[in-house]
Image (cartoon, rainbow, N blue to C red; front, top):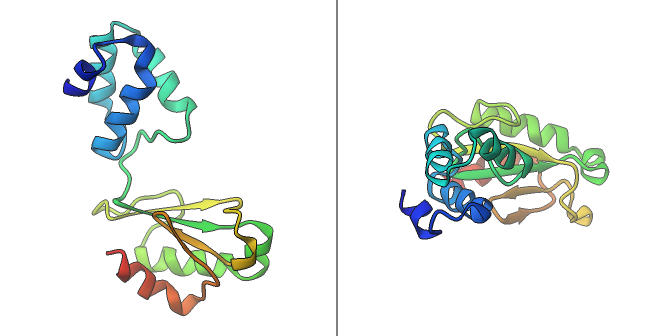
Length: 144
């Protein structure tokens, strides 16, 4: 409610409102989206339309730490799939999932843009280049 009031219930600021909600909860809870719809007097379908249009918004809870594995060509030929498999095994989840304790979300990306460092993993905003299978566990422990 405070977030919506902060924007004076201005419908044109829907994206900013959703950004603040996501920052607060690390995703967009269904109850919050319903409240936005009710308080801004706009259809819930419109709120969901915006929330699902932008890749930056998540409708499912995400982990406090986001781990991205690059699967671009340069990383792929250097063993990125093996790195991904090791991370999946350590976390007990598959790419696109979040651990039950909401500690980690594991994702893949087509290219991080640091091909010379491949295979590369991004843990939150930190680039971890020239990744090897034996570096997976220490990396995850560092972010636990």
